[in-house]
Length: 316
Image 1: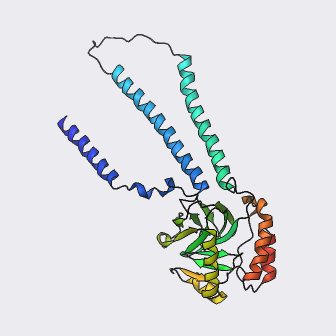
Image 2: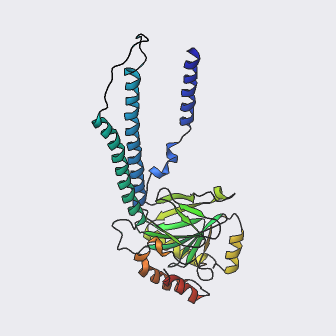
Image 3: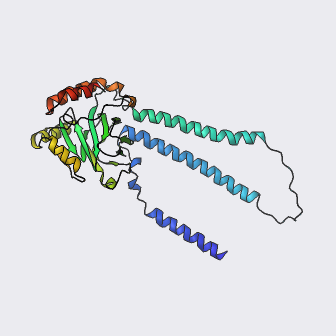
């Protein structure tokens, strides 16, 4: 008995030491900075509370059963009285799990629909389109309307919907900014769309959340949200100071495994366009913005193949 007591004590101490190493600040998914992330954070908290309620009920019933039906000092020939089943109890313990699953299903469907769409209240505002392409082991961000491109960092204006169009030049990756929304895959043969919005200025960590090889841990990038005025100043500064992105330079970037932050005053969309947009991803509402961004891209970017870019944009 004494050994068991010391065993339980050691287990308790080990758990406390393990939990003490957990920093609550690392749970950035529960520190949302945008409407999409707030919806997901609320859903996570709701699901945790539902789970806690179920566990509390189970533990209470477990303790009651251990106490009420524990071994007693009755004689060996004791025969407990026969108890018939109760149909209402059977109905109750079948109905409760069904109700819990139904509630979680409704919440999940509503949440999924909300985060897959443009945030509520911003439906009539033109989104900022950014092509986010991954390669071993970096991220390329192309702004077709602004005619600039960055590597391993992306700047966005606050309170404006952002439409990230995701694809990959290598293995499948997953684009994730925990404080702004959920993750979505980037693949080599299609373009996926992710709608995000930042309602607070600040710096947010983004990364590849899908294990894709030896450089997976280095596939991090910074998302900097700023006012619309500061964003315009940043775009103008890049156009004035950053070099143009040539095809040779872009191919060199693709071949280089690890690079730092870089900025360019043109994009790779002209000479190396993304794959055809996947129509099943729900891009029907962005047809007008695609045409606008296609025309503006050709004005601001030095595109060497205008016909290919035009067919790509209208294919959306």
